[in-house]
Amino acid sequence: MKIILLGAPGAGKGTQAKRLESDFGWPQISTGDLLRDAVSSKSELGLEAKFIMEQGNLVSNQLVLQIIEERISKDDMSSGFILDGFPRNVDQALDLELLLTNLEKIINKVIYLKVDHDILMKRLTGRRTCSLTGKLLNIYFSPKHEIDECINNRGKLIQRSDDNEKTIRKRLQVYNQETAPLIKFYKERKSLNIILADKEVDDVYADLLSSLEIN
Ligand code: AMP
Image 1 (cartoon, rainbow, N blue to C red):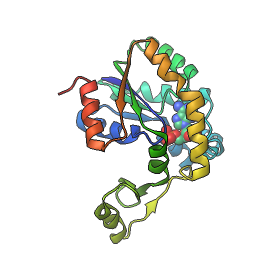
Image 2 (image 1 turned 30 degrees about the vertical axis):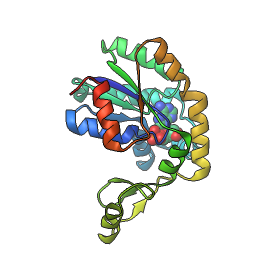
Image 3 (image 1 turned 90 degrees about the vertical axis):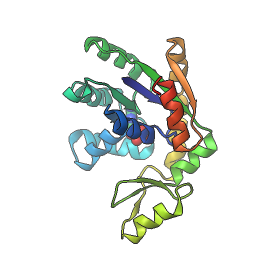
Image 4 (image 1 turned 45 degrees about the horizontal axis):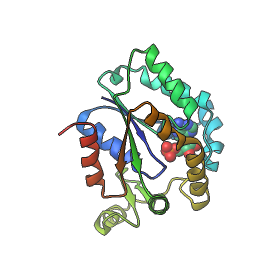
C-alpha cells in the first residue's frame, strides 16, 4: 500500500505512520526525519537545511526531491510506503506524480488528518522524546506514569529545536499558505480521505485502518 499522510505539524502523521509501519511493514518516509538526520550528520545537505528548519520555513523543493528520489528508489519500497511530511506544496505534489510515473508506481490513498489549531499548538509545545527509549511523549497528554518512567530511569525529555512557540507559529502559518492547498489538489483528483484526528491515538488509528479498507 502506498500512502500519503497529509496534515498540519502536530496532526499525528508521524505517530500514525510509525504504527502502520510496525503493523504492516510499509516504511515511513518522513522528510522531516531525513532532514534532521542530514543536519545531525553535518552533511552538505544538512548544513543547507539547518537554518531554514530552525526558522520554520520549507527547505527548497529541489533539495527535498533529491532526498525523496533517493529513498523511494530503494528495494524496501516494493511492498509500499507511507509518505509523512511530503508533499508539502503543490509543486512537490506534481514532482511526486512525475517521479512515481517514471517508477511505474501509484499512490493508493491520500489521507488528511484534520486537527483544530488550538490542539495543534498544545501537541507541538508539549511534544518531547524520551532520550532513553526514543518514545514520543507529551507533557500535557501522556499518562503521568509514562513521563515518570522516562525520568526515573534517568532519561531526559528532549524537545525538538523547532518546537518552540515562535517557530511553531511560523510552521503553522507556512502550513496554511503552502500545504493546505494540497487538500483541494487531492480532492479534485478524487483521492482524498479525511479523518478527524483530534481524538485519542488508538481511535484515529482505527479510523485510519477503515479508510485504508483494512479490517
Ligand atoms: P516535520 O518533521 O515534518 O515537521 O518537518 C520539520 C521541518 O523540516 C519543516 O518545518 C521544514 O523546514 C522541513 N521539511 C520537512 N519536510 C519538508 C518538505 N516536504 N519540504 C520542505 N521542507 C520540509
